[in-house]
Length: 128
Image 1 (tube, rainbow, N blue to C red):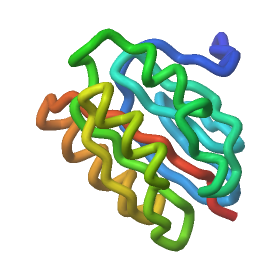
Image 2: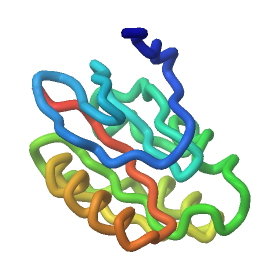
Image 3: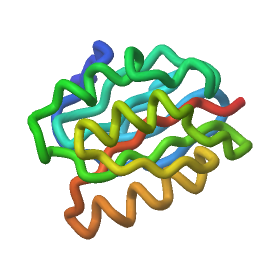
Image 4: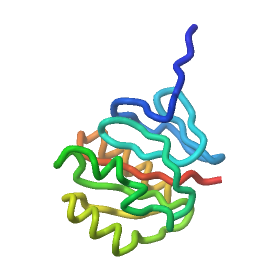
């Protein structure tokens, strides 16, 4: 049986199968740390806390083709932390709506919207 290696990017849309203990499960793999889930694929993502979620940390999302993402769900860990005004402005300029919530709620909402074939992305902070 061969094992697929995850090098920080996995192409394609994937349901998030689980989370906790500082990571996530998707596509029958696990990843420790935060992830950025786009229609084009799942990226390892550096932010560890809500203040680190900035336009710069979301540059991969903002580089997606216009219209590829209509809604970004931000999972801010265990507590809801609203996005900064700068982040809201950058996403609005890109035509992307944003909703911030705890990571568990963001995963549930993402999986439902993905199942509805919506153009959704998720920026998910890992929780301990």
